[in-house]
Structure formats: C-alpha cells, structure tokens
Length: 110
Ligand SMILES: [Mg+2]
Image 1 (cartoon, protein in one colour):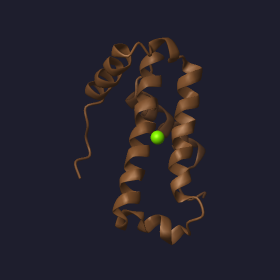
Image 2 (cartoon, rainbow, N blue to C red):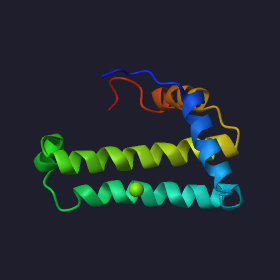
Image 3 (spheres, helix red, strand yellow):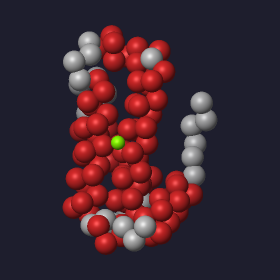
Image 4 (cartoon, helix red, strand yellow):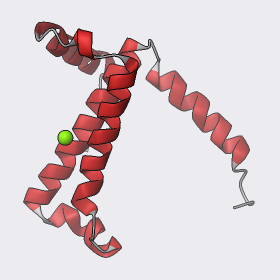
C-alpha cells in the first residue's frame, strides 16, 4: 500500500467541495470538531460488541471493511477541514506532538 499522499491536494478538493455547496457558513471550528467526533463514533459503531479478534478480522469481511474505510475517510476529511479552517499545519502538529509524547513516555519506563 502506498503510504504517502498529497495533503494539499486533498485539502483543496475538500475546501472546493464545501465552497461549491456554500457550506463554509456551517464549518466553524466548533461544528467541525463535533462532526469529527460523530464520524469517529460511526467508526466505533462498526466494532461495537465485536470481540477484539473479530475486530482485527474485519479486513476479511468485504462489506464491513468497506464501511471501515469510508468512516476512516470521513474522519480524515473533517480533520483536514478543521486544520484548514484554523491554519494548522498537520505535519508540523503531529511531529511536534510526537516529540512531546516521547518525553512523556520515555523508553524503558512503560
Ligand atoms: Mg460517516
């Protein structure tokens, strides 16, 4: 699986999609945060009541796996949209937070 993607390209597609539908008026930071949480819950709903083994085997169920991929995409769409609205550089934010995490959870102390 290809592991790199063009974040700027995705952001442009998502921003244009919203602009064409005049949805910018609804896309406050608060609303986008809530939408992101709803999509994360939709992902969780797929796995609700499965055993851990069943959840890991979801890749074998074509219909469910497609659903998982769609919800993962929904989450990323809202995350990209929120970051766009707040001028957050996603790559910098992740690298910075991972540095903090490394300090918080030093090796050999877990
Ligand atoms: Mg969804």
